[in-house]
Image (tube, rainbow, N blue to C red; front, side, top):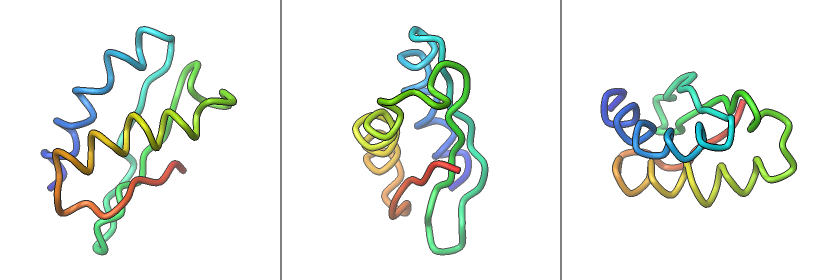
Length: 73
């Protein structure tokens, strides 16, 4: 599952990096919760929540059906 999540994050990463940000995988819980850390310009950005839900979570849940949700830590 970790490899699938990393591949999904690789798909969204160029868009984040274009704006000076990035995302890194922190952990995947046994319950299927994917925990990520937004870094760079994304860290502390007022739009970070929307980026997480509409960007990162959307791609991860589409690519990794075993994942139940994505959380920022």
